[in-house]
Length: 293
Image: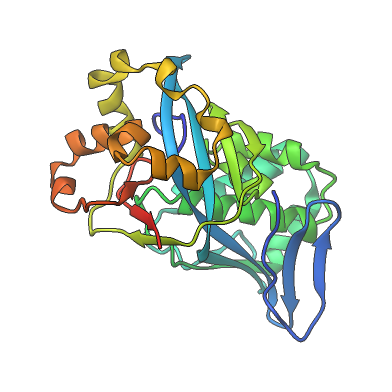
């Protein structure tokens, strides 16, 4: 979920232990697992420690947010050998192909590079997604899947792209993709989501609670624009980007003050009020609540 009204919302990928060879991306500490069943990569969830809307221009909201990777919640993206004949995704049956962020990433990589190796590879491999991150939950699952797909494709197809280029391509799909492509454990994200600055801090042990409520990001941003945009105050967030996440959560205990989209989500989905708990914070446009264990 990021600055896009209709949108969704690189560091180190943990290595899955395997008895076969691991492929590492030079300089980015990206880790890909390869075995007889194919290539795989983890697509981690994220939470927004804070999320403040800073303006609205060119039809989109701008923001300042602290994104933090959730270490123990991730989807798995795998490229499995298969004589497909066309681009094939398994594990996302409830999402039409044209709407799938992974398919959009595939199209964007093809359009940007014109590299026939991509087409050839996916005639011989299918994409298998093992989903654990809930949808419409403020955790960036769709964006993380697409970003992981792009990073894995770059490696297995030997694409001559920098991480910055890959993030730029990703930003055309969704505002959260640059964060997931850079793959920092923690980062300050600003602008439309395209400015990603790593923040050096220990990973927090986070507990998540996602009620059975799906929050549509486009509706939440629309609700914010119509009801809350004229109330934003940039003076209130001076210096937040310099504080570590634990200190921010300790100093500012009100989830409404930490996340501008929480109030908008409550207006769009009043049933969220029944799910709120003392001491819990709200991620993105929702519906996930989180706290430090």
